[in-house]
Length: 546
Ligand code: VG1
Ligand code: CO
Image (cartoon, rainbow, N blue to C red):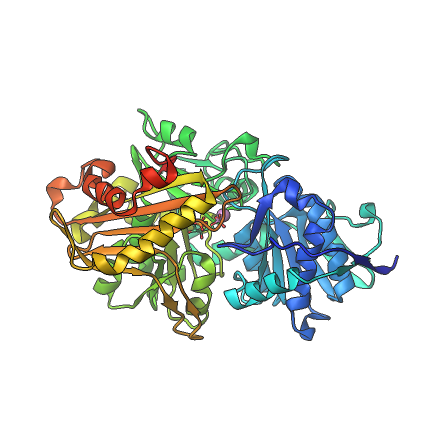
């Protein structure tokens, strides 16, 4: 056993996006590709990383196990004292965050492309998280990218792969570094027990409440089975598709009404269960579904914020809330009512880290089915679902009742996202550039009854470290509070994806039952008029509407 230095050549395309580096599996399988990126991460770390602890785990997708072993061998070469790794290389994204914090680790590496499809022809991804348990901020990912473009070698232990044991729980050494293989679920489950009233939820299940939790053949399976079925007593079989598969069964592990089609069908049929839930590839996203009602993620955030005090972990109230810029302003109304601040950040969980660390925000959320809190530094799918169950158990209300009462009190923010996927990158960039040129002239312009109040390219100054992130999406805000936002996705691996976010506030109760797309019709037309999406993309309609 020895540490060797391997000569490689730099790749120019290892720029982390919204959430780490995501590429096709085939790209990651090129020789030295993964190793170069991992070495770039290690080279970006100060010397105090030597002798410290690193956490490693992933969502179980194709290549997870291979990559896990490579990272353990490289961590030994870098001089970490210990690697904590999930059993079989498996840890959900929120579990990695939990384990980093619990063990006061230096950081962690997450192997996941999250909601992107997996399998040999699918996507793979890697992300570095820092000591607070959250995604590395831009100043670190920028540095990693810079190093990756110059790197010419990496260090790795030459220990045989079959000596890098990840299938047995327990501890052993490689090059003097301790490797500890932990149960993937235990620490995470314990954390949730401390936040929620498990007894109340258990009673609710015991009295006949039923749930269908669709793990989408992704990593939430073992977590939901242990927590929802075993610990909370939901009927056996309530958690479906609960075995993580390397290709997620060939499906797209994204918990929205389009991709979680099966769950929606069941929840919209007669005799639907009381509660439907789904989670994504790495279990940081969640969808909540009532009977014939898929709860909009922006509404879910607002409802959790409004009811947080009913839950033991948040009984003393919230310091503040935060949402990503495209997320609807439903939570802003709750914050106003509670008299707490509401922060608006760029898309991506890394922007919430400082606010959570500084205790300026307690709950955070994104329109993309992500909700979380200061219990860790990632969004957390299973947590969000148990949060909802806790509120239902305490209020003895149904999902639909809670949502409708919320609208009655605060009004309804009709909301939808239209995605144009896999469009030509050059054309997508041209569309955005032309929007940037147009925005100054938009101010004050009237489109029927919609009058533009503000039109800008969102720029964010972090209130904690004053770092500035520019060009985070074009916003058109109307005088009546409605909004249209345009931005390009930073998680795709094929061409570009244009996201158009549409929001309309409605205070008139008689209009709450309207179909969302109908309610947003005028805004959809304005978006087309302003951005000329059809002519730029050649697409007559979006590929996904959520
Ligand atoms: C998307 C979502 C964003 C989310 C990110 C990572 O990013 O819009 O809200 O934080 O995915 O989620 P983008 O750049 O494609 O719009 V996950 O669950 O894929 O880590
Ligand atoms: Co995810």
